[in-house]
Amino acid sequence: MKGLGLRAYAIAYLIFLYAPIVLLPMFAFNDARIIAFPLSGFTTSWFEMLWTNVALGQAVRNSLFIAVVTSVFATLLGICAARAGAMADFPGKRGVIGFIMLPLVLPEIIVAVSLLVILVQIFGLNLNNWSIIAAHTLICTPFSIAILNGAFQNLDPSFEEAAMDLGFSRFEAFRLITLPLVMPGIISSLLISFTISLDEFIIAFFLSGANPTMPVFIWSMLRFQDALPQVMALGTILVTLSVVLLVTAEYFRRRGIARAGRKDTGGFL
Image 1 (cartoon, rainbow, N blue to C red):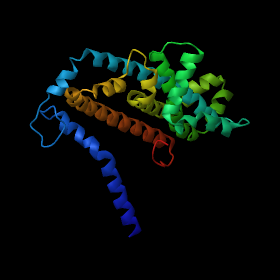
Image 2 (cartoon, rainbow, N blue to C red):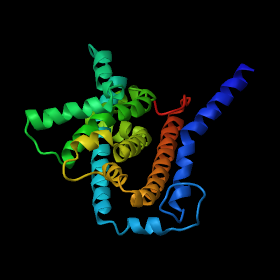
Image 3 (cartoon, helix red, strand yellow):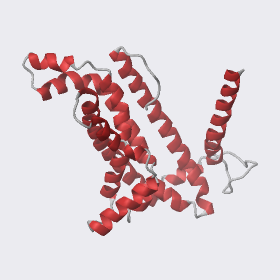
């Protein structure tokens, strides 16, 4: 009886959480500018209008550039931190790893305001795509570490030691032995970091300057009622892309665990 109640609660929670997302494609294909029931008809014109929006195209290019660079930087830092955390022992390791993971629990608006003050007031820098990349790398690195921790913890450190006994340098042992084994985790980290950076709004809102990212541009479109159907169409595309990336990332995460012959405990974190 207890298990049945918990299952019913979980189902109700998921319905409450994801039901609004189901409405996105419904209104995206609805032939009306007013977002309301009943639906008036089927159309794809809102998707077609997205291709003619020059400002939106620039925002999309900004977001893609930021997301790609952020995912690479965050994954490189995540590889270093996860390898040190899983395969090395040094004084204060727990405290250092905990400090690196701190952005996971900090409110993003606090991080955004702090970075804005540091970049503009202290260093006098101009806000551009690179300021957003620095901030997104900060918040994506803990996610990368959380994913890669599992990949490195499933490895036997004796693999690298045996390679070095055979004449390889430490870097060659890492590149030829360890790196191929954790590659599924690296791909998963890249995809997750890309998705987080692409969808992030609060930090980009404070640090975007004159070149808004796609979420910031969507926020600006919400002020105009005639643009709401286009927002629904763009939201449908983003949700579909995010689901595809997350499913792909989960596939590579499970593949990496299966290759290591370890039991899957489930989830990225």
